[in-house]
Amino acid sequence: MSLHPMKLVTVICESVLEEQVVELLRDCGVQGHTAFDVRGSGSQGLRNAEMRECGNVQIEVIVKPEAASSLLENLRAKFFEHFAMVAYESEVRVLRPQKF
Amino acid sequence: MSLHPMKLVTVICESVLEEQVVELLRDCGVQGHTAFDVRGSGSQGLRNAEMRECGNVQIEVIVKPEAASSLLENLRAKFFEHFAMVAYESEVRVLRPQKF
Amino acid sequence: MSLHPMKLVTVICESVLEEQVVELLRDCGVQGHTAFDVRGSGSQGLRNAEMRECGNVQIEVIVKPEAASSLLENLRAKFFEHFAMVAYESEVRVLRPQKF
Image 1: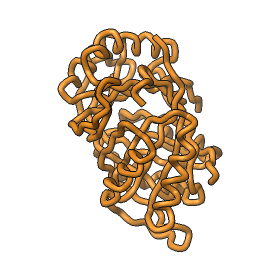
Image 2: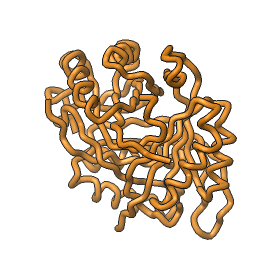
Image 3: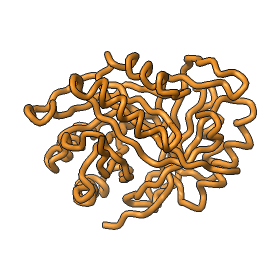
Image 4: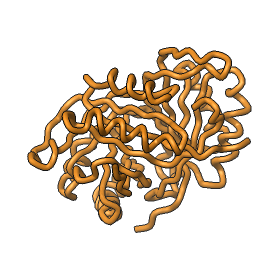
């Protein structure tokens, strides 16, 4: 058995954006994703520290390490100026990585 | 684009504790969180190894690395003696970290 | 307070497999798990690159580092040939690790 180092990229955003985010991920070559509804709170940027409650979605994809940065950059360029979105990457070691 | 090393702190507990946990997180300066319902099983401590099924919630927050330990310590002090709770931290690299 | 390095093992599979996967995890000595429903897409192996939408479940367990590999190997041996399944491990640092 071999485990391969990959990146898990996690995106948290308003539920209304799910389809657009998944479409962008596919355009970036991502072959699979998971999504699930989350509730939560966040600051609306630096100018407004008030908390707000809203329906959000958490989207997770596994990508090759060298693909994570460009994926995040594309998310930033398309969504970050206009929408509340959190995105981060972390290290995972994946069984059967040829799927990604 | 820059990615900033942060900590993801994950808490799994009985759903009835969600509000109290989120309140503690806010008291610790956390500005956003996500929460979602999970089902699962766990041992009820060392004295009772029987499994039990219950409705739980998973709560996730991203914090500065130096804040994670004190957050976990506060969770431990307030909840661990009296409630079934799992808490852990992991490394993430976050886009737009000024939100946290 | 002490944090202990452990492995988080994540399994994503068709919902119909949840019970079998949890049973295998317990047979491997895992004392607790969380599970939650996810939606998503994935390629059906290398022969078929078409996307499919389906109801999936994400199952997460925390195990001692030395137990993760054998857990993943058991998952691979039992499920990977016949079912769409993604499995990966990541590093976490856990409060109160004596539960696992």
